[in-house]
Each structure stands twice: as C-alpha cells, then as structure tokens.
Length: 473
Image 1 (cartoon, rainbow, N blue to C red):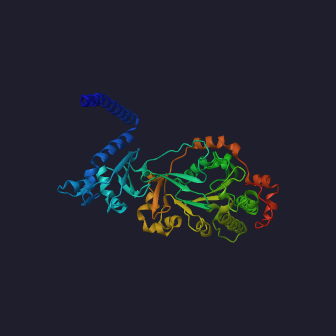
Image 2 (spheres, rainbow, N blue to C red; image 1 turned 60 degrees about the vertical axis):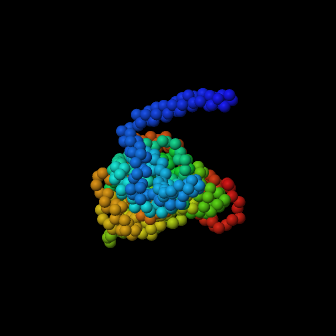
Image 3 (cartoon, helix red, strand yellow; image 1 turned 120 degrees about the horizontal axis):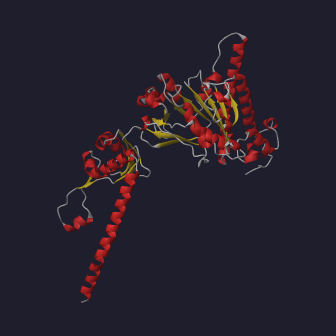
C-alpha cells in the first residue's frame, strides 16, 4: 500500500514538472523571437548563421579533422564486457553573434590545437558562408576563438559619437575595429610619441580627433595643437577643438619655435620638481591628475616644422635655422618627456626622414599608416617588417573604400593588423570642446601653483636634489 502511495505521489508531480518545463520553453522561445525581431537586418542574418554553425558543427568538425579518436574504453564500458568501439571526440563550441558575423569559442583536444584551427580557417569560412575566419588564442588556456565575418569591416564606414564622459582608463586610445570586427585599442601609458602617416584625406586627422574628443572630458589631460596646414585655427581641422587647448600654433615656423621652447622649458621644470611634488620620478606611477595633467602635443602636418629649406638667401637660411631647432626641441619632448607626462602625436603624409627626422620618428613606439603610394613610404611608417606582410601593406589602401583604414603592428604578436577608424562629425567635436572648455588649464600655471615658484626658477634646480620632502603624495 505504501509503495502504491509513493508511486502515485511521484506520478502526481509529473504534470507539474511538465508544466514548468513548458513554461520555461515558451518563455525562452518568446525571448528569442523578440530578440530576433528587434535586431537590425545585419544582426538577424548573423543570428541565422550562428544557428547554422551550432547545428552543423559536429559533422563539420569531423570532416575537417578537428576531432580526436579515443580508443581507450571508459570505466563503465570496461565493466560491461561489451565490444569497445573507438569514440570520436568533438570539441565543444559556444557561439555568439554580432552585426558583422559570429564569434565561436572552441575547446582544444589532444592533437587539435590552435595550429589545426588556423589551417582549417579557410574551409570554415566556406562552410559558414563567411568572408573570412580567423583562429586566435582563447581567453583561457585550452580554448581557441574563431571569428567569422560575413561583411568586411574594413569597407564598412563607421561613425563615433563622443559620450562627453571622462574616459574610464587614462591613456587608452580606442582606434576602431580590425578586419574581423574586433575592437582595437592602444595603451599609451608610458608612451613618449606616436607617428601617424598617410595620404591626404585618408583619415589621419579624424583618427586624432577621436582621441581628443574621448579624452577632452577629463581635467587630467591638457592639449596643445600645431597645425602645419593653416595660419589660423579657424581655417583648419582643429577649428572646433581649439577651445579645448591651452595653446595653438599655425604654420609660422618662428611662432612654432617659440611655443616649442616654452614646452621644453615646462618639461625641464617638471623634471626638476616631480620628486618634490609627486614623490616619484615617474608620473605614471601615480597617474595623471588635474594638478599634474598629461600634456598631449598634437603636431599635424609635422613636415611643415621640420623640413630642411635649401637656399643661400637670408630668408631661407632663417627658415632652415628655425626648422633645425624645431626638430631639436621636439626631440627633447619625445625623448625626455615620457616620465613627466608628455605625449607627442606627429602626423604627416610620408613619415620619411625629410618629413619627420629619424631621431624623432624612430623613438616613437607606436606607428600607424593610412594609405601610402609607395612601398618606401610604408616602410618609413611601419618599419622593414611590413615587407614580409605584403597583404597588410598600406599601399593596398588607396581605393576610396579604404578611407579611414590604417595599418599598425600587432602588439605582442608578429605581423600587422588593418583597422577601420570611425568618422567623428565636426558638430560632435564642437559639442565636446564647448562642453569641456572650462577644464582648460595651462600646465605651467598649475606647476607654479603647486611649487610656489616660476617655471624659469624651477629649471635652474638640480633634479637630483632630494633634500626636500614631497609636496603631494
């Protein structure tokens, strides 16, 4: 009797269990359908592709030899004394999607690792109906990330709308997306300089504008602009951003020389006082602040200020003297300014030695190149290694479809990546600059307020004198 009651109780719960399962299934289906209907056309296509990838993976993995054969019987099979057939092990696959395609995270098996996935990538692209598939190390050991893109992100123009909020991380340059639609950013902490090259109209200035717009809401960053294309700020690309800068210089070499001297003097004053003010020899050990901001020096069309002028007449000799001294002063800022909070960004069409002297260019750890006309210009911008990666050469980016696409070396990995940088509208740049104008502070005045001494007096101090205690922790 008791057994019957127990059985009846168990079976009595069955309708409840089935009902709960149906509710969960219906809820999940409604959520999935709603998510699909709310997505745009590109994302819907990616969702369908993700479903296809999951459904066909077990068969496809065996066809591409991305599986392993286990001839050792399991403990349960050994006890059963039955005929032991080899087991085919298929890697587990977790698939997500975005507008460009799918991201699949696969496990590795004995004999099936990153190299095997990379070898199979072209065949996966065909089977998944993708433009290309890449295989990269996963986010944890024993895993591989497969990135498939249906549309080429490099020829898909993108737009960046600045949020107007301070950056979450200082000195992080969000560049855009690579050829697989993955976000690309460059850490500029402890970086003294960046060299950006490329043909006119292919995105150099817009790339720098994004950095300025993203960093402008922070009081811990101050800007100074040199624009070698124009005489006055309102004529050039920085007309909307100049109100966020503490100084601006046009194409006048004498004026540029004067401003560079002031910056070098500020650099020397910072070097002399940094241990007394911050208690450190390196500003990055404590990070930039409103009182000791990171100084970003943007030198656009840098060849204007450094080009060697040939001629024997007095006017040409005078320009040549200014250009030579400008190069020497900029070298001082790049080579000695890193630890005290100076970051110099130089842009020009060809980063050859006549445009940016090699003693400046070669000490800039970060280099980008937009479209170039010659292989020599590509080598000047990216180094000799670009010759070994012809498919990534910026010479191939001269088509109008590649406006806004840059090439740079991969940090921590061999080779180069191509990046689609977004367009920043002038009205958005003006909005951010106007909203952050109140944050402009001249770093020299800030330093004088901290130390109670003038910049000129500070440059006369011995930076190795440790007799004074720090003014700020």
